[in-house]
Structures are given as C-alpha cells and as structure tokens.
Length: 135
Image (spheres, rainbow, N blue to C red):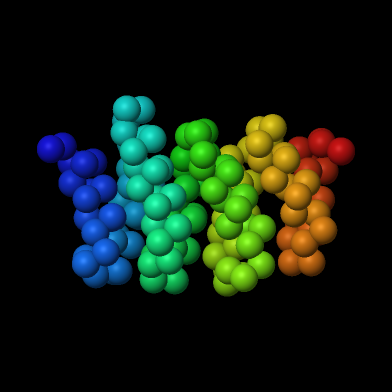
C-alpha cells in the first residue's frame, strides 16, 4: 500500500478524528498527487461531501477539490453542492470558488448558468461568466 492509499484510508475512515481527516485533506490538496492517484483521491473527497461528515471537514474538502477540477465528476459534485440551498452558505461558497478555479470548462459554465437565479450566488456567477467572456 503506497502513501496516497494510506491517506485515502485515513480520509475515508469515519472513526478517525475530524482534525486528522482535515489534515489529510490539506496534505492531499497541497501535495502533488500523481496522475494515477488523482481520480481515487477526488472520489474519496467527493464521498466526504456526500456523507455529511463534520462541517469543517466538508468545507476543507470542497476547497481541496479545486485542485481536482479536471477529474470526471468533480465539477458536477461541486455544482450540486453550490446549488443546494439547504447546505450552509460557507460550504456552498467553497464549492463555488472551487468551480471558479476549475476554469471555464463547458461543465463549469453550465453550472454557473444554473446559479444565476440563486439569490446568494447569482451576481457572482454572472460576474464570473463575464470575466470569462461568456454570455
């Protein structure tokens, strides 16, 4: 088992302390994850967002996913989170900023267009689309 696999095991262990899991998220975000490990790391992080772990762990995970914006499924998951009005605003904002960092891909543009009617993110979504020179 290599180091990234061990980190994924710690990250996805619900019995592990949230602080330890947050440290792992930051380490994976700040490290250079090899191409062959990017999808498993991103999948583990997306699972964290779905399992309603601690609020801070989910927030840090949403921010970390900005580094994995080119992995299949990541923009969609971030978009779902940003669009979900029942989620905490800071978590939705973290997802939005991670979409911004992912860049003007067709998937991110489609998600931002869905955010335009949102009272919290509509103006920011319009502004970002304009900055990307997208109508």
